[in-house]
Length: 366
Ligand SMILES: *Cc1c(COP(=O)(O)O)cnc(C)c1O
Image (cartoon, rainbow, N blue to C red):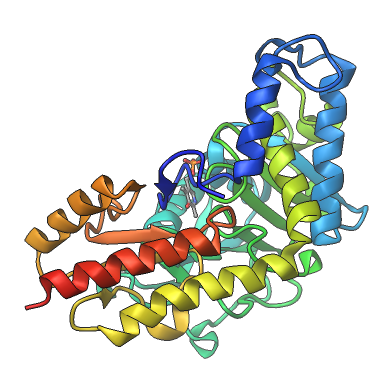
């Protein structure tokens, strides 16, 4: 089936499944089971409360989430989680939070933690241009740390953890914004996981937070209501007016992943085949497609690479646009090129891109 729009390889907002785009189109005219547009439905209606519950049930099934974890849908993006986490776990506590600085996004989370207390960097990849992740043996954890925070997939640099960092006994907290639900995981390894929708999950506007109930027991008093997880738990993620439309579309994506794809294990097989196709070409022509990340840390979601010079990169982007591909420019912080292969990017779309890149190579090799 042809894509609804051009082929979206953007780092975010990412591609959405065609099936979901078509359902969304219907819901804009009339939401199923109502006589209203999804854009005008009350967030206090039973209909919408059921959407939130339906979404939650898909997340629980997809990740096998036990009942002592809450599933929240919050606003403020993943960036607000950079603040809400240290407010909850570091404020007023005489403890240190452990962070890894592995790329653009983890680097943004750290100054927010500093506002609330002591922070220790267990790894800093900045001087090496964020080309690799730490090896497990490099990380020296303190068993008394307040918590340990890392980013499972550095979206900008295309670095992804393929092992579980952290130690037992210290709350493990992970920003999974760009690889949430791309593969199976054991949620019980984590105390808090967060992922905004706009990379791998839906349109922008909400952030899914899965938080273990025990993490809330030492919450500080007097936190502003919007920044207080306990408040959002109590209100079932509808404290103020939430992004109704984005939450509806995200529910459709979660349903698609569970019912059409068949869950995270199936999704991982597809994602691996897509990544192998693209990295296969990079490895075949390493003098032309210059990969950013160390091989063992390569992301199956974001493939960051360069061409031999800036002129060729410009030409690549112009040619790609004409061929109906978009979102292939690298992040402004590192430049170059990047192809994002989020869950909704199909194998067929990936094969088109790889063929396009092969042709570009043949016409432009020196
Ligand atoms: C894009 C991104 C963010 C920023 O998220 P916002 O929702 O824009 O605040 C944070 N973390 C990671 C890993 C990202 O990829």
